[in-house]
Amino acid sequence: MNDRQLQQLVSDISKQFFNKPFVNEAVFNSRLRTTGGRYLPGKRRIEINPKYIDELGMEETIGIIKHELCHYHLHIEGKAFGHGDSTFKKLLSETNSPRYCQPLPSEKNKTSFFYKYRCLSCGQLYKRKRKVNIKKYSCGRCKGKISPVN
Image (cartoon, rainbow, N blue to C red; front, side, top):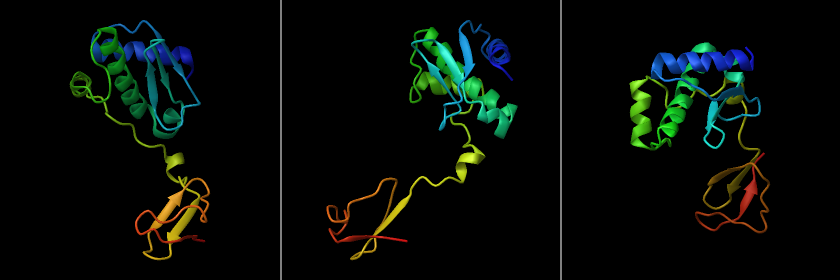
C-alpha cells in the first residue's frame, strides 16, 4: 500500500464511521517506533506506521486510523481531542475505535534495558538502559552499595 491508497482508505473510513469528509493529508511514517499512528494538529496530518500493516494486518491498521480520525474530527470541531478528554473517549466508544494499539510482535522480543544492578544489602534489583557509576550512586531503598549483575 502506498500513500495515495492510504489517503483513499482514510477518506473512506472517515465517511463510513464519522459521516464527515477527511480533506487533509494522510501518509505513512516509517520512523514511528512505539505507536501505530499519530495526528499532528499543526499540520492537520495523520501519520500511520507501515509496520502495522505488515505485522498485524489491515484490521489493526483500520482501528489505528479510526483512533487518529477521532483526534482529527474533534480538533476540526474545536473540541477537546486529547487522550484523557471525555469527548475523545466518548467518540472512541461511539465509533468502536481502540484506545490503544497492540504492540508489534517484532518489538516485543527486544529488551528495554541493558544493565542490571543489585543492592548488596537488601537485594533490590535495578534495570537500566545506561551504565550507572556504582561508586557515585547507592541503593534508593536502603542506601547500600550496588553491584552489576551478570
